Every structure is written in C-alpha cells, then in structure tokens.
Image (cartoon, rainbow, N blue to C red; front, side):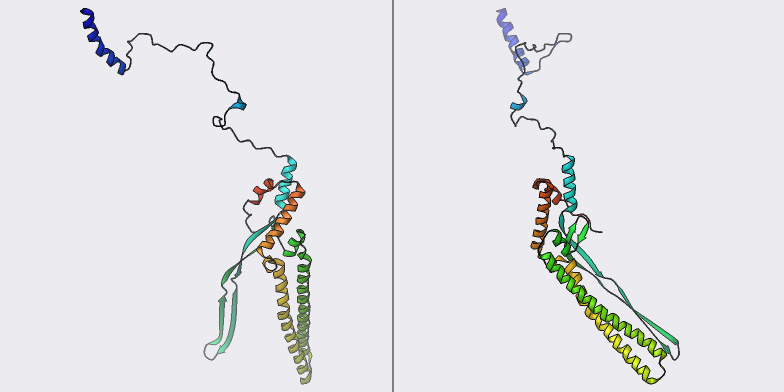
Length: 271
C-alpha cells in the first residue's frame, strides 16, 4: 500500500520533468558526452574526389603573362586601326563693318556694325591609330587596300588644279601692284589710263583665281580628311577589321587576347 501511494505521487513529477529543462543542484557534477572511441574517425575525402556542389570556391587564378606576350599586346594596342566619331564646331566668328562721313553739324561721324556668326556642330568619323588621326589615303595604304592609289591620285589632281588657280591669282595680284606704281609715275593721262586698265584686269584675274582655286582645294581636303565621302561605314569597318586581323596574326595573338583591348572605350579626343 505504501509503494502504491509513492508511485501515484511521483508520476506527475516525472511528467513535469520530461517537459522542463533538467535542473542540476548546485555543486553537482555536470554530465558530459563520452569521447569517441579510437575506432570512430572523421570521414576524409580526397581533394580530387570532392563533389562540385560541396567544393568551397577559392581565389580565381589568372595565368601569368610572359614579357613577350605583354609586349605583343601593347604593340597591338598602339598599332591597331580604329574608327572614332567626331564632333566639329564651326562658325563663331565676328564680322565688323566700319564707315564714316562728315556731318554738317556734328563733324566727323563713324559707324561700326558687328555681326556675330552662329556656332553649329557637324558630326563625322575618321580613322585613328592610337591617338593619331589618319588621312583616308594613309589609312587605306596602311591597310593595303587597293583603293588607296586611286584616291591619292584624285586628291593630287585636285591639289594641282588649286595650285594652278593660285598661280593665276598671284599673277593678277602682281599686275595690280605694278599698276599702282605705274600710276604713281605716269606723266600724262594716257599712261594713267593704261595703268588703270592693267590694275583693273589684274584685280579681276586675282579674284577669279582665288575663287576658282578654292573649290578644288576644298574638295582635296575633304577627300583626304573625311572617309564618308569615299567609303560607307561598312566598307570602313571591313578595312579596319582586315588590318587588325593581319596585325594580330603577325604578333601571334589569339582573338581572346585582343578582345578585351577592342572592347575598351576610345580615348578622349583632344590631340
């Protein structure tokens, strides 16, 4: 009977102890887990057999560049051809007209008129090798393009025509200056008229020579500087790619070696 009462009184305590944390009296030893036996060793996996999902990522390793390859990359960066867009500003000059007369009441009167030319921008593109801008015939000749001799011949023809007209303008200028000295030393009316006719003809020839020579000179400068007058953007890109591929093969570089260089942004213009 005594054992039955003790069992009834101890059962709620056991249920409560099962759900509550274990209370250890002060000063009692704390139980610890038993150490693993000598036979229980941690699992060791060889490094070459670690699954990819369990591998810990380490620092990325980049293959080192040899001095020869570094020099080849630098040479490719300096010698490759590029196409850069350009923005040119025009205008902005000032034209001044000045005139004067004698007023009946106020004395000498001077008037000045000033006209400010507007500034406008034009967009174009050109060939570059490093920071240096190349003329179109020079870029085509550097790339071995067969159109280079023909374009250079056209430019030379335009420049020769401009020089011829400038020579005519110079002859007219000489006649005009000579007529001024002739008028200064003329002794009669007939000589004055003769030298006046010479000066008038010389001035007309000088003006015609300057106007006529400006057109071929401008055409030659345009053909030499702006590729868009002789090549389409696709043709210019083909010229650049062909030259750069030949340069890459000559330096012994792979497409992967030069791709990062070709993807770099162009340098700022200002040269």
